[in-house]
Image (cartoon, rainbow over all chains, first blue to last red; front, side, top):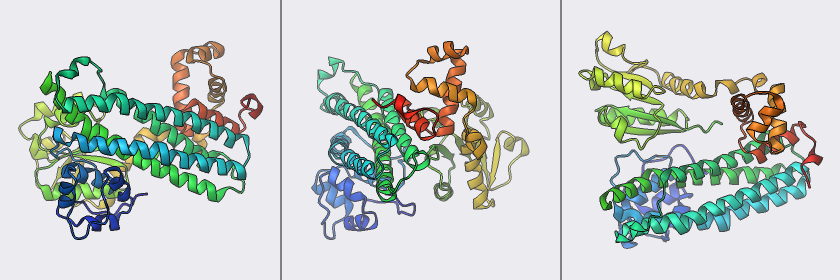
Length: 236
Length: 200
């Protein structure tokens, strides 16, 4: 859930204030394994104590607040572990929490509206979820380990598990466009039968997920990939 | 469909003006991404291959670089080039731009500029009557959800693959749905096909 009026987050701000202002940042803290009861400490202090890159934290937090990276931020290869920690935990959140939550809602929806369309929506979602899981597994098993290898700058990169950022992008747009399909169908086409409340929950859940996936791919494409391609150039 | 992202690049030396403009742009309610750049050649290097939809440039930045600027315009033909004007410039310089934004313009007019760009992509889906699929598109849709390939559809309807692809594009634009599974549900909801054919 996002709002439009937000302030731009900076390192010297009090950590607890920003979560109070935008509670969806709690998910960011969860993914970075940070505690949210932090007393009077600033963002920078909390990040340093937890060995989290402040620059990365601020960029992601600002994404949650609706500000895209400007391209002026300075990231380095030292930021890779923080980014991957975030992405991996986010995967876990999608797979074990968010998608199952939506799946359950669709089942509830079918109880209220046992139409063939809803049955097909269930099928659509299952197939879609399977694709998403495959993509997440690919990143966990191929892409992230490869980035770690680069990060450790071992000569192991010759193993040639070459990985392309274009491939990344295609996967993402596919994942996002099927989500849009679902929203379109539930909002504009499938007739409503006594299922308004559960349908509202699904739509809101889908929109939350959409927003979060958008942040996720922005992190990968505008923060992680540029660092990685620089590293690749340096090593080769 | 409302979520099409607009990429905007701003080339303006004054940070105050850049920040103010960014804020105004974000507040137009458009889903946009703003790149701040320092010189013309950054268009090629810094933008991570993003397609820039609108470039907003202080005319001073192209003053002695007219050649470079026109090459850049040629290399990025889909970009709208807007000059950001708050002092006097020669008319020939301003003529280089597709559009002029004046510092005294109202906030609404900047919003309109953005919305115009956005609608340029989707002009075909405004207005209700256009959203209806044509008879031909319905035929294509029926075959599509049976799982036929573009070529098979073309053969069946006696049209070229290109025509099939362009029908498919229109179908997705009009319905907002891209995947085959999604279109199947669409077709059932809108009674274009019978449910029995697709439930096993």
